[in-house]
Length: 397
Ligand code: SF4
Image (cartoon, rainbow, N blue to C red; front, side, top):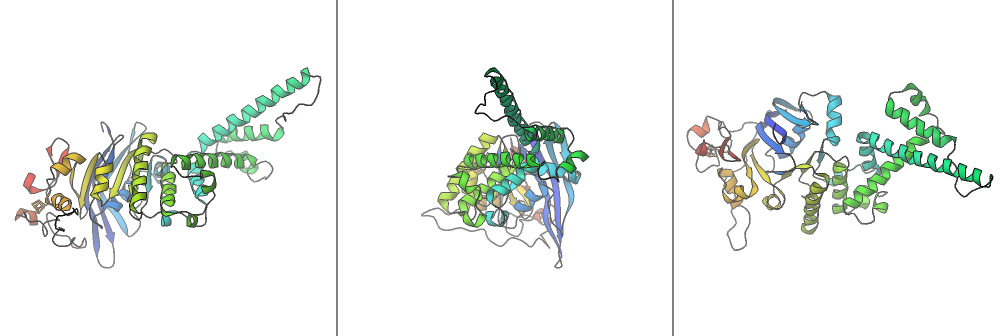
């Protein structure tokens, strides 16, 4: 996959409802390159969010992915995410690819503090890293205590200020090492149940909380030591969104799927979050799929953009090229409908078709001023018209 890190290849998704089969995705084609931000734009209900969920194979019933592939390059190995075992997918979700959902209030659990929710992600995906850090701390404590012991010996047994590492410190250190060597150790399962002996777990949690504070600081949340212990209802909209982004980035994923993370925020906070996402992309070197219906956000944030209509990607190109030279009639209409001061307000004629009975051929045919006979019978193929500029329309085939 050259510099591509993710490829969505012809994904088809149906929802089996009482009203009929909703053909939500009709052969979606997308690719994401290392380190880029790919915008996915389109009207409400065009399949942007379900495309993100399909990548993670998280489509809830009655939805069913009926075809296509999602290829992901994971540490030099290519995975097909739609057919991969659930155990592997649980590692991929959050650790390699994570998703930030639209509404922070519903994404956060109201009965846990912000810190607890970040800690949970860290303990699930970065336990080894945290355990190693605690082992290093305990090693330092043990080494210090040895020094103190020898100082004591030199001073003729006189008591010194430093307290030596006791039995428990050494026991915790060895327990953590045993956990690293064999996480399923029987002995450790027993030790875990004995309160006095399982203090090492508290130490790992404490380390995870420290890391959570650090992540909140990177998110530019003021006073992160206080916010880490706050419940979601105590946070403002902007802060809650930052916490959700923090959870998404806690494990330094290779890909972040951000599903309209600024939709419910006012413009000033929206700008701050966009700025933050830009900086975080550099800091964590992640690739981002940014789902939005706002062309302004695309222009501000993205390197390339994919335009979706009624469950298909109709055009994909670099952002500047798309704004200068939109090829698909839907993209042109979408750009023309951006409100401009002094210009009459324009909207796209007609309505989005029902996906239970979508139009045959090109799904845009009943709203397209250029529709030809063939558009009503045959689905156009996506073709590369210029370098890196793909479009799905008979006008350019
Ligand atoms: Fe219009 Fe036909 Fe192109 Fe569809 S394929 S956008 S209907 S011209």
